[in-house]
Image (cartoon, rainbow, N blue to C red; front, top):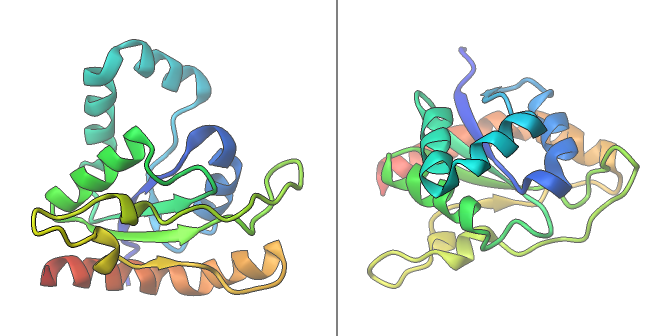
Length: 165
């Protein structure tokens, strides 16, 4: 089976290490992250440049994987990526990363569900449709292993959910 092409959405500064570790699992094909210098250049271009960069990163992807850290929910650009993903017909899924170690061995506390902050015109929360998983395990390695075993199926389910809604 071909790896599905996905866009990863995450809060860059605190979670880039954890996001890189998840991307490196390799069960799906993800977008390459911007380096610190590239991201600073994009940000200097203002909101229009950021939106254009995000659109380019999402192009050709079938699903967005939101890596949910303790500061991910209700961030301006995370919300933008979620809304654009949904509006473009992409699958959408959340994977909590609070139990994963960063480069210094720190484990962050759990954050809110980013899909709770977005609603359809009907008033229904996106979180009532889109799944947000908390990987099982008592250690960082056990949680990475859970992601490795389950990420591909979670993405396929997200794509199916989007097609049905």
